[in-house]
Structure formats: C-alpha cells, structure tokens
Length: 335
Image 1 (cartoon, rainbow, N blue to C red):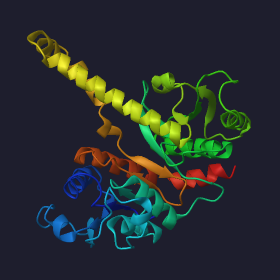
Image 2: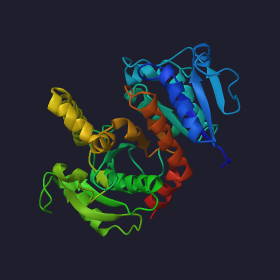
Image 3: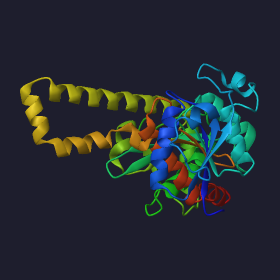
C-alpha cells in the first residue's frame, strides 16, 4: 500500500451535498495529513466550496453531473449508468485507485452498486451492514442492520467473524467479544437458526474473538459484549428504536433544562456533566456504517448528518484501511 490512504468520496449523496461533504473533508484533512481524497461529483459546484489555491495533490476532483437520487430504486440507480458520482466512487476502489469508498447517498443503491462492482470475499455468502453503538465501556459493532432480511446460521457465523475483525480494526488494543441478539439469554431460547449458529460459534476455533452466548436487547449497551450479531430485519428495527429513544431523551432533557429558571440554573451548575452526556449521545461521533464482506470496504455515512458527522465517517474509512480490515476478514474466515 502507498504511504497515503486514498478515499473515494461520493460528493453528491445525502442532504445538503456537496457542501457538507466538502466541509467534512476540509475538517478531516486538517487532522489527517496522510490522506488523499478522490472526490466524484459536479466539479463546478465542488470547486466553489474549496478555498483558493487548494492543494490539488490532496483533493482530486473527478467531474460528473449525473447523480443518484434518494428516490431512485436500487435497480433504477444501477441502470443510470457508470457515470453517476456513486458508481464512479465505487469503481475507483475496484480499479485500485482508492483504498476505500464512502457515500452519504441512497443506501439501497450503494449496496447494489458495491456488490456489482466489488464482489464477495471468498467463503462469505452475504455482506452485512455494520455500525458503531455506544456502550458503557466504549463502543459496540452491531450487524447486520438491514442488508439481509433473512439469514441462515452460516451467515450469522460469518457476521461474527467479520464483525470481530471490524472491531479489532477500529480498536486494536481491545478484545472482541461476540454475542447473538436473542429474545432471551438462556441456551434454549430462540428459533432453530439462531440455536444452530450458537452451537457453531461455541465450537469455532478462532482466536480473533470470544463468544459470549446470547444477549437481550436491553443489555446491548452494558458493554459485556462488543460485537452484536443479528439478522438485518431485527438489526434495523433495533437501530431505529435506539436512534428514536436517544433523540427522545435528548429532546426531553433539553426541554426540562430550559423550560424554567430553576432548570436553567441547574444546567449551568452541571454544565460539565451535561456536556459529557450530550457527547456520548451525539450520533455524529459514531457516524459511518460499514458494508463488510466485499473485497474492499465501503462506508455509508448517514444522509442527514452534518459536516462534523461526515468527517467522523471519514475517520472510520482511515481506520479500516490502516488496520487492514479486509486482510483480517480473509485470514479469519479461512480458519
């Protein structure tokens, strides 16, 4: 690998693009001097967002006026041609011109275009969409979050291996502890698929992670396990429920602290602790879902995040490349 990490960026996906994308890149580039950003989108619009005399060796802009809309179906998006900003972004990784791809655009389209171009890692049947969730100790890797509505036992075992590899790429000094999301922690609970996956994970000889059995939804954030594995249907519902709950708590807390003079005084006295809680619940700080199982990593930024959130998803790109995520998955899936 070259000394510089090269990130292929779809500049036209998500809300308020390309402005938030370029603003996020500028923030990220101040902290990461060894990164080259290959940017795909409307060059006329993008160049206006950069400062004058910007470094063209770090920021490479590839012009295209064609983009995929949030309203496009995955199939119609793939049929738009190879000159959309999203397709060109993925193609840059396919051609080894970039190490990792990122988009804040249409999730379904990104999944289909990535799978068409990058293909699967050998011995893995399905890719998975994974993301970071905060827990009491640090963060969880949770997967699958919607890429696969139905999964068999092999898929869940593969997700365990891929998820633990991702966790070790992001947190190389911590041990990966895998748990299967289930309706109970007892060994007899669950359907036949999850029971079979449980038995296989108990017998698997893989030093990359420790299997901790089942975990219930109310224990996900305890930190006893840090790689939470489930099918895409259950995972997506859990994700949306967690996001909604966090937003509700933050909104109610803010209103209670500003609705009267006593609340305002209390918030001033406890400003340090309040900021700590606010930071822990700030979704921008763990923005960046990773589509894993393909021959190159693809990161999906939340479409509604701002430039700070997008910069954090660029940090995810950097970590998975620096710590050889794909090699870790290949090595562990073959054991």
